[in-house]
Image (cartoon, rainbow, N blue to C red; front, side):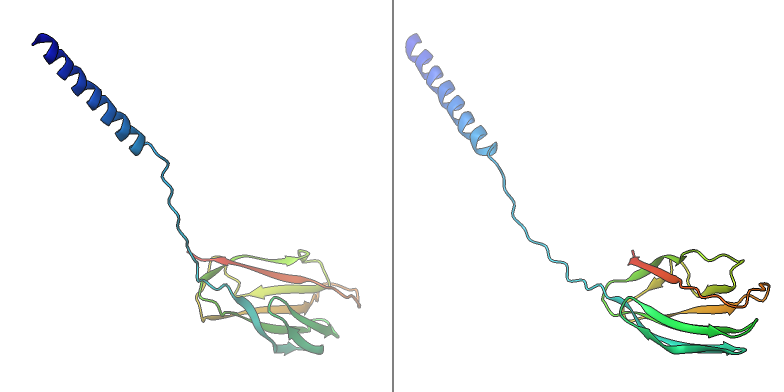
Length: 166
């Protein structure tokens, strides 16, 4: 009887160990999760127009201002001191992702001692441009009246960098 009990206990232990081994193998297998995510956002912040809005003195546009999605151009002539011309650049968010103005700068950086001065209005870093919204930036080109040189030509770029808003 003693042997029979010993055999039954051994068989129970072996069965338990076998079930534990099968359970461990089953639970320690590799788990694979497959998924797909799609972003349906559309980024489309672009220049939609440029126009001359104010002329002081005998300044004028040599050619009409032009624009593409990412570039606005103008060619102004300032005939005498205190002459200036102001352009309005329209930027619109035609996408569905909110944007904000991250940086603004003139390249190369203007110097206040230059004969031709460039200034910008309404470029507020951090300001949001929600989908469908339009924002106007103003760029003024002015003849620096404190200079005595009579003729100069200058090219400059106004760079507005937009990024996705929170």
